[in-house]
Image (cartoon, rainbow, N blue to C red; front, side, top):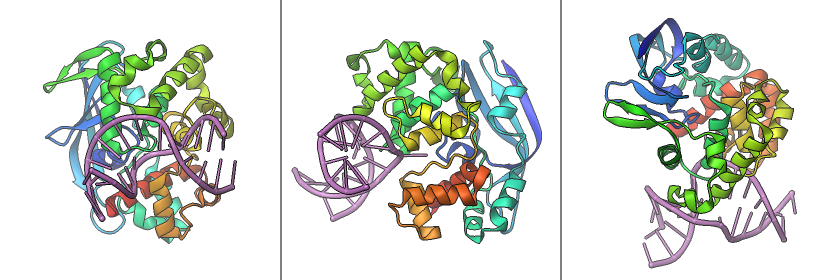
Length: 300
DNA sequence: GGCCAGGGGATTA
DNA sequence: TAATCCCATGGC
């Protein structure tokens, strides 16, 4: 049991961070806080002393403080962990200025999701989560991951009336059969999950975590050696679980928004990637999240 | 490179 | 009830 407070935050919106599609295990509480599982800990994150910004260029993001309540003690993540996980030490104001300076188009997207931050999640959990995400929708992705954790994770405890479970380790999933996981209803993704778990085990535990130390293109190639992982899933893992901020995942929503805002043909995925690399550079991942959040807000 | 099956579930026709 | 869509990939 512990409580951490982070003060003096800018460009920060819990709703945008947890509902922009980068994570699937943070659930909103009636009081506006979010509860989720990190490692073996249940955590509740709440905004304090919120002052909403006004005027053009900001919608919903806040300056203020953040309180994190951690309800399990075993290996409880400390403040260093949380600063990294929530990407608190990155200057998003500077990133927004850089993105919008030479591009009036993305300014529209930034003005809708200016409180987004890229979470620094666990690579293994991110890998499996985005294999599950393929050709699906966010509510179902969240249900599948929840079922997987409930069935094969460790029970961590109860918080505000709900039970929470850890994300199952590679060794656990690697030893399951198709029959074992048929109850999760993952469809054709099930053999991908088992195959990727087996590969993660045989490659060794540290190998997946090492993608953040590899050059972006090498890490992408390595991730694509996992069954069920193509360029889209791999680039999501690079961004959300591998600290590669230049990664620009192109999914159906990004194809849509690149068509609406920049006039790309929706099938010109290569063109979009090239454009992102040249135009957004090392901020590609942050730009992608602003664009994704914007198109989902405006075309629901 | 193009095409299409893989499962399942929600939404729309 | 049927068709379509959904944060794609793999195999042909």
